[in-house]
Image 1 (cartoon, rainbow, N blue to C red):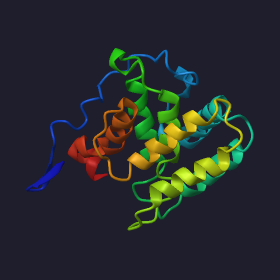
Image 2: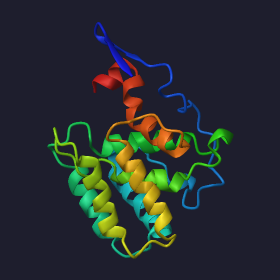
Image 3: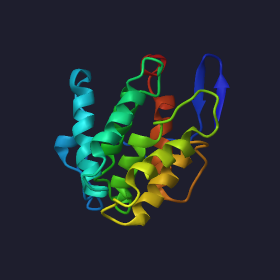
Length: 196
């Protein structure tokens, strides 16, 4: 999908077709979203993400283990060993995720499930391992099992979305395409942002 050309990367024309440039509101298919949940400046980023995570967890899973879950995520994403797979990456994905919420073509996307997948998709990250995504999904299931306010189906979708970020394969499912496009969106960023 990506071809190396000199010092720049050429993006396949079908990639990133779902990431618009404007914030258009929120989807009717989202039960947990509110405008106040959007990430703000870096100084309060972790606190904002924590608040957003707890609201999402409470809505989708229930209150049990929310603090424990965020603590595990914070230890992972705030680790000094993480260069790219950090809270900054999660915040960037959530910002792009929020931009597509009100677009009619996305009306059927399960945005809350995509959002939960964003939070967990890189929770386990060991360079060179091929099972990071499956272990990240297992972490979510371990924290959420038996507590889901919405039953098993949303967690099944969240697991599928997390595991889809392992290979970023094409999919007919809009939620999966959105999740993988979001995860790869850095490749279409301006050179100064990509290099950072």
